[in-house]
Each structure stands twice: as structure tokens, then as C-alpha cells.
Image 1 (tube, rainbow, N blue to C red):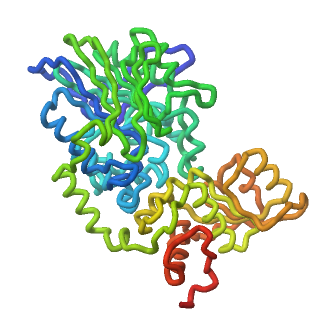
Image 2: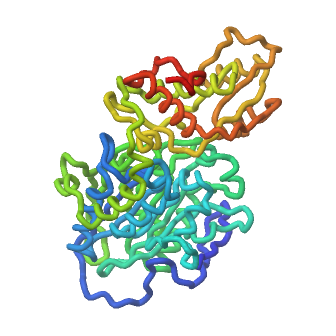
Image 3: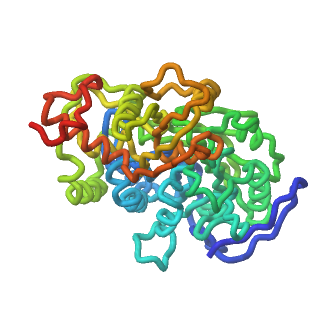
Amino acid sequence: MKKLWLLITIILTVFTVSACNMPNEREDVPRDEVISYLNIYYVNDLHGAILPSYRSIGMASIGNLLVSQKEAAPEQTLILAGGDMLQGGALSNITYGEAVIELMNATYFDAFALGNHEFDWGLDKVMRYFDPSSAYYTAEFSMLGANVIDIRTETTPDFVEPYSIVERGQLTIGIIGAMGYGLESSIHPQHIENYRFDPPVPIVESYARYLRNEKDADVVLLLTHDPGETRNFQNLNEGVAAFDEDAKVDVVFNAHSHQVFTKNIDGLAAIQSGGYGSHVGLVQLSLDDTTVTNITMSNLDKTNEPLLNVPHPRIQSIVDRYVLETDDYLNTPIITAGEPLQRDALSLWLSTLMLETTNADIALQNRGGTRSDIPGGTEITMSVLYDVWPFDNTVKTGYLRGDVIESFLHNVGWSTYVTTIEPFEADTYYKVATNDFVFDQPHYPFVNAIDIEDTNIELLALVEAELKRQAKHYDLFYLDNPLILDKENTD
């Protein structure tokens, strides 16, 4: 059951929250064990990286660390996720995140903050895992997003909670979740039209004050899908560090920018732990009864934590089940990369593929829509392609005047595009092709194009088909291999 919180005004006030129980909240439970420390493990921006790779530890080995620590010291262990956990890897994408949810349950996660990529399939496809009445797999941890507002109800969406309370030993721990500043622009407009992200700092301050004063929280944590640095003239970490003692946040867990850092900002501990499962954050609180006396932070990887080098048998068995169910589709080699394929170069190659497929004059691929490199010698499979192009984008086309195109390229500084036109004539209309995420952005000119067409050609299917054709003609895939769209039926 979701708590409704009152509107926050410019003058911050302490507000009343309904008394219904939050996930993980236990009232008046006697605690027998007095703990002297608390270890908080943290993963952010996993992006569905279930399997190990050159950039990912893999969930079986991450699970080895988390499960062993939780089972050895359950009262001294808390496990958190900072958003963008589900979307991006093949095993997760084809199950709409269910594989990651099951693995998070199995590795004892306590809370999960919404990230912008949880909206990529439509929020309903994620939130069904948090609805106990649904027929889908059920998450055993909280989904948090205090500043994520459903504009139809002016409160948090169904099954998204502003905070969670957990008990460890003698401690009452409040965990606030928040979305970062301005991340609506990184979500397809059709998936964000019913939501907005309010400025997080005043909302976090109000909940922190409420948790400390009304819920007797000894420790307050902020789990936020925000890099913590200045965005849109706002700096979340500096804002949180300025709270008074009645609204004190002990640790902020940052995310989104995939950085690896630990920081102390005017007494506020802050950590971010990479991306794609490259690291596991560890925050250690030393305690004197219910008082935090010291905070140490580190980011763990295979070089400094031996447990991350060994897969946990139980977690590996879950991974293996998903692999077996999808093996033929995801892991059948298509063609081998004959050279290292860099991310921007792959964006340009895809732009060329879109251009020739649609007979456009210019085609564009956003850098954020191409997510990774492909190392030389890699056997390219659908699993690899999901890592590179994980989004369910389609190709859209339309006609724009040459001066509009030139202005866009110049003002935005767009570099990943190809064109057959040089120069563009100001008053001539040219056919433009790009993915639907870029095309539909209201601040870009494509929405004002004429003769707009959604081709319904999925980018991933487009790439798959071309590489399968290339495999019939070339031993290896190079970016300068001529496209063979017109040779589909030849040997």
C-alpha cells in the first residue's frame, strides 16, 4: 500500500505520512543483537549485465559476495541498488527485467531506486514485479522514488514508495529514493508523458526530517539515480550536505554517470560504483549503540575482493537456467569482428545502414543509443548486439529544410551522422532518418518534419539482418565492408 505525501512548498514543513506499513518496515520489534558495525553493499547501473564480460563481473560472482556476507552476518548487512538495473543486457531485455529481479531477490537486495531506464519499456512493465496481485514474478525488496510523480494522481506511481524503513540490530534505518535532476529528457517522450521528476533536494530534506523526527531513524540513507554533480544548475550532493542535524543524511548513493568514486562533501559520505556490474560499493558504518562514529567507503572489483572472482553455485544455477532457455537465439554466432569496433564508429555504421535502407539524404544515431564497443575477434551474437543496441527503437523518417538541418547539426554539435548531401541547400527539403527516440524529442526539429513515417523497422532487427547477409559474403566483419542490402538473395 502506497503512502501519499503532502505537497512540499518552498518553505519546508514537517508533514504527516499515513500509518500504513512500508515494505521492510517493522514497528516495535524487539531486537536481541546489538551491532557495532553495518556493511552496506551497493550496485548501480547494472543495465542487465547478468553475464561476465570484459566490463562486467557478472551476477553469479557479485552474488557470491552478497550472499556470503548476508548469510554470515545478516544483522550487519544491507544491500542496495541505485537504478538502471534492468535495461541493457540480452537476458534481462528479453524477459523485461524479470531475470534481474529474480537474481536481486536471490542475492538479498533490500531496496532499489528507480532510474531513468526503468521507463524504457513503459513503467508498467517494471512495476508489475512490485504488485503482489499480479501474475508476474514478485520482487522482495522496495522500489523507491520520492520525487517521481504520476501527474494523473499527483503522488508517486503505484508500487513506488518514497522511502523504506529497515531494522538491523538496534538500528532503525530510513532509506529515501530519488530520481536525478532533469532525467526526463533521457526517456522516450511516450514513456514519460504521465510522469514528472520534481527537484529532489527539498523532497529529500522533508523525508529525512520526517524519518528522524517521526520514525526515530538512527541512520538515514539517500539512494538516488543522480551523479551528485551539477546538473541543470543544481548539485544534489551539495544540497543534501547542507541539511541541518534534524534532516541529516548519513550517506548518499549516487548513480547514472557510471563513475567510480568515494567522496566526503562537508561531512556527507558519497559513493558511486561504476556501471554494468563493474564494481560493488561497500560503505562501512562504525557504531556506538545507535550513533554512527565513523564511515569508510570503498569500491570492490576482482582486483581487491577475492569473492568477486568466484561464482556462487546457487546464483549461477539461476543464471544458467536463463541462458539455457535463450541459448539458441542469443548465443549463436553471426559473424566475427575483424577489428575493434568503437562505439562512435558503430553509431556511424548504423547511420549508414539506416540511410541506405530508407534512401534518406542524412541519417543520425545518438551516441547514447549505442552503448558499448565490440572488441576485435568477438564472435558477434544477438547477446552482443543487445549489449550494443539494447533499446527497442524503430527507424523514423521525415523531410526537413536544409537550413533547419544545418542549424541542428551546428547548434547541437551532432557528430554521429552520415549524409550524401554537401552542402545542404537552405530552402530544399531533405529526407532524414533516425531512431524514434531521437525523432520524437520535442526539443529537436524532427517532430516538425513533413511526411513523417514510422517505418516500424527495429534497429536491432536491421543490424541482425545485415550482419547475417555479410556472413554469407565475408569471413570477418569490418566497418568498411560494403553494405549488401541489394544482395540479400545472392550467395
